[in-house]
Length: 466
Ligand SMILES: *Cc1c(COP(=O)(O)O)cnc(C)c1O
Image (tube, rainbow, N blue to C red; front, side, top):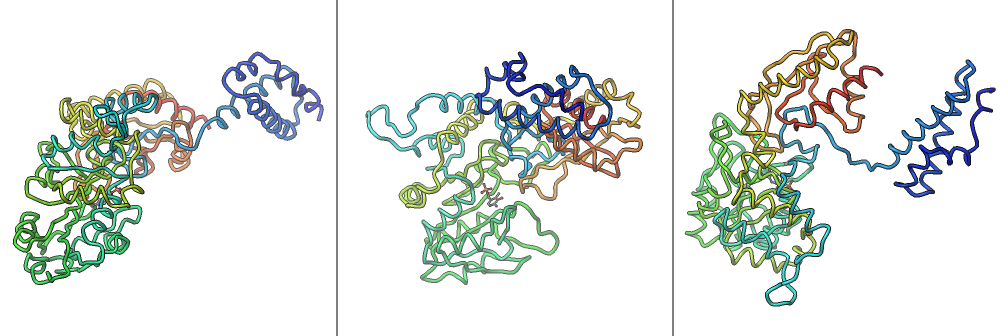
């Protein structure tokens, strides 16, 4: 109790230089409430200790506590996460990190006025859908393009525009569910189109489609089975076969491509995913894909295809509800410019991570190992810090059966519960997420950025002290 009496009054604390510094950044009300909250915490702490303390020491603790309260209360719930999992497109971690061109472009458009819906040539109202379209046409070779909120919205809009009140034929093997409860049958229902399933789970032939066409058929639909693979005794209809049938029976063909990859990654062992360009060249009338999967841009749903269908979608009332804002449009234009005239293999983070050479990954693992050994290697709680080969993944529902060989650093401990350690590191700011394997922490280097190395060391050091 004698300690409590040494706590200075709030007015006095507000005069401390350290506290006055906060007034330069934060408003008065916020700082005063942080001071009161910090004092409450200090009182509770003092009540629980029996030893008597000097006033100086109590004041030092008050100042430190105020700093901690201010830091934690002055931040939102979204925070940077260091991704040590080796899963490049981690759906739970914001999918694709943006490249610099996208970022610079987005910033320029965000802080200034811009021509989002202003036709500068005519000096009158323009269309936001004018932007990005030319870039997408140049890159994919398609006639027309449209961008909406995400690929789920793109599929919904396509089905609603082309097939509401009529029938859409889909192979049973492609009635996919994507993480976050996107299900083709549900989206179909929502769009007002009637789903006609043909074939079986493992085998569908073009004749199954052909036999189900009637006067009420509006569309032939294919969904890329991006997050699973049917192997063994299986047969799926090729897009080219669907296109041929569509031509013969005068029906449009729509392909939900999922990932929307724009550059060839087969050299790096990623072969199965068809590029958007290839799909467009095969004659599909409508192709939809995500902006933030293998394309490496912002969340968006991209629609490319025949002009008449894209124009019909632009006129659909739903488009207004699914529309993208200037931030998305600018980040997407910046990303697409990198594909058109820059170097995506270097500058689109997702593509860069997926195409790193084994030697480069090993070099990075050695660097992380060296820093860790130097800074925490002498901690008694650390047993070994070793370089190991790891299996990374594309993630985001792409290449479900493909592991990409990479390198990582594995840390083993003495008397430390890795689950508990991992919890503490996850709660840091930035948060750090890695893999746990047989009581060891495994950090894959593929998904780390340069500045993450030292941050990981700090986070680990702090966590081990707790
Ligand atoms: C990911 C995916 C979607 C959903 O895309 P979002 O951009 O997340 O809305 C739809 N269809 C397929 C085949 C996908 O892989």
